[in-house]
Length: 391
Image 1 (cartoon, one colour):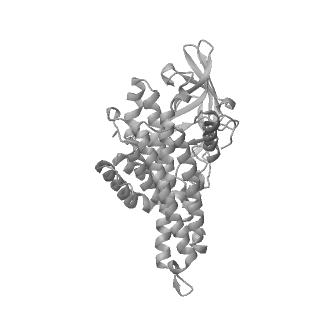
Image 2 (cartoon, rainbow, N blue to C red):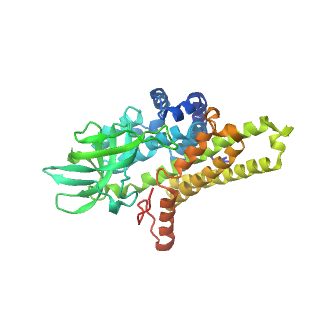
Image 3 (cartoon, rainbow, N blue to C red):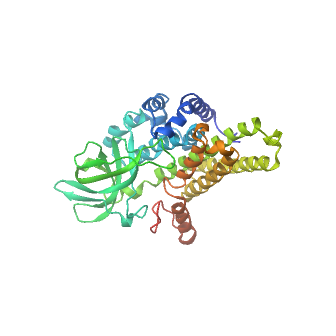
């Protein structure tokens, strides 16, 4: 499988597997239990250059392709889907949005620190009234003097312990025209408040919480891209992002499968090995077949994206189907652990919880299927859902 990978991609995958085994796996249960990623692990990831994988070399990154990013995300997710999910936001969505939309000054100011892991970036779109339906969003950027004023509130801000925030909001320019933009806000900005983190079902290693803006002053250099359409222009970054998150779902299911396979090989039931019981052998074989199909779907589309030949809606197909299938696999395999599977001490039930969280985070499956349906019936694919679909 994946025998078409080049030498650099294979080496990066092997490096990520070693990093996951030595650095992530020993902390995986702790990350889930304490609902935080240790600073030491973030520092180790920075040493390995993981934060800068998808950032161009001129801004301090490695300039890798999305296939390479997905390989890394999959390997790390085998050990901790929660940490892998947090990492993909920092590897792909946030820095690539800046790189696509930003001015040269903004890129020079933000991306080198992002690539080094020195400054984490958060991405904030969801709102209480709107979810992914931006027409219902209430957070607004209004002209004020020679700058702007930002007011509103956001929910479920990913990586809410970050220092720099990319905030999506309704906008109005100085000529009175309205649009939807992407705003750079620093955590220390007067009037910005990061509220207590949420406790979540899964993906616990990523801080998630609400933030609010009360008369926050935004200068002209705080606008990312065009003030009227910066919030909807970064489609390439979003497509790369959903592919990388599909990779974490794949890695999550593969990690659960690998641990369950070891359990099945070693455990005996009713006087014989578990693998000799036909229903159990069937479930394992079925899970392996699904994992093979998931991997083929993901990497064929990731390779097409790198060639510039991917229909963007296929990113939504990967995110939705791989995410849902990963949860099905994790849920079924958990049954093979019996009562020990629901005990935290074994550390396997987190895979099922993380897999379910991934079906909702970064756009629920229903949002992605709504986008696919929009493409099917109207020939229009967009990461902004056409109607209000909750997430």
